[in-house]
Image (tube, rainbow, N blue to C red; front, side, top):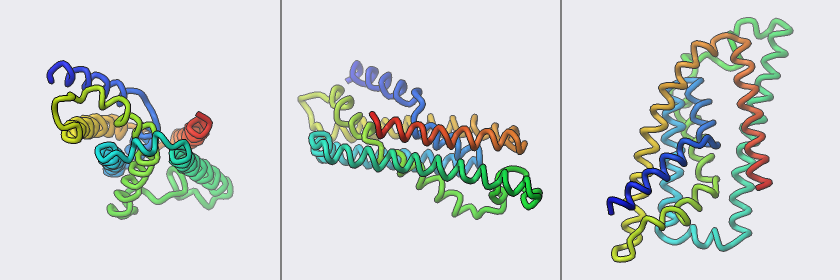
Length: 219
């Protein structure tokens, strides 16, 4: 299995290296707080586990062969990304209005409480749920397990068992990758403490969410 394993690792690493919705959610969460970034990463990988289980029991085959099911999942995922983007853009504009009227002068960035004023549990759940929903509503993740992963499964063994093993390896690689990315992205927090930089960052990522969501819906 060494040749298949090497090829699988290569494909997985390339897939993680290409920025997508998960990448944006994790980086944006990490820029707010390291724990939220790690929670978003775990949420994304939990969503990946759902796709892995679905592929192992054959549900992904049903979804892939049913255009209606595929379109429904795709549109739900696109709508969620657009929702995240609109919420971010509206928060930026609301904060701008508050600063211009003097009501937001006590805020160093957007009109949101400082990281230390947000409960750890609420922050963690916010990051986890965003990461999970973004991934589990991404039909491309399901198709990865359906079309790419089976190419590395031997015909002389249990396909279900091999899918589980390769899927678990994929999830573990992703956790290492995302946690490393969180460490890097968390360093942006010092830069984003500047109100103008925070404004630009939130506005840019908000519009990126919207653009990705529209692109997913139109694909």
